Length: 203
Image (cartoon, rainbow, N blue to C red; front, side, top):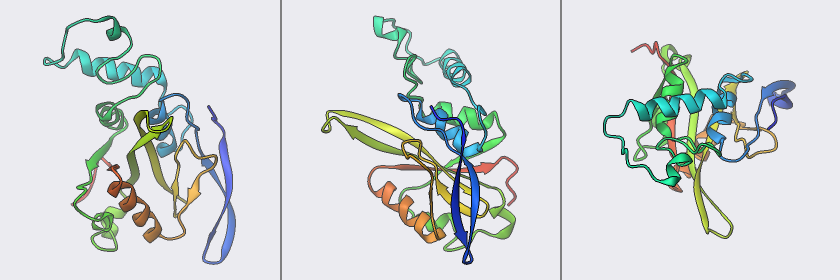
């Protein structure tokens, strides 16, 4: 797993500059862990141990949790896989809340541009937009193996980046419209979009 910042060149207003971006690469099914660290742009902002503890606490606190034990129960937990990760959205929500962030599930019936109120967020709110987390379906081995993958998208030095841990390096979006087109396409193909806000979001 790569844990060093990646320096890439980005251009804005005709000028090119080097930008240091933290970008973890995927290992097993720990993509939510990598997505969170990439979102916060901080090495070890979250650890495997912390996400595992969140998943276990969620199970322990759920009165409706199925208690029937099977040999697979040692590995396949309700909110994660003990060995490979594969954390679910409940872990994402709890992890963000622990860092004073809130999550809003984007209504897939609406275009992503609706987040910006058809173009631009009110200035009072835009500074509170903490990035995006995207969950997309993936198929491997000729479609025999199906799963889902977590991706972080974050604005760094005024530029939006795709920080997908499956990418070799982050990919910049030249314009905000390219970001919206990318997200709309992902949603159209089965993706789910989560908008991340600072907890103290103004009206």
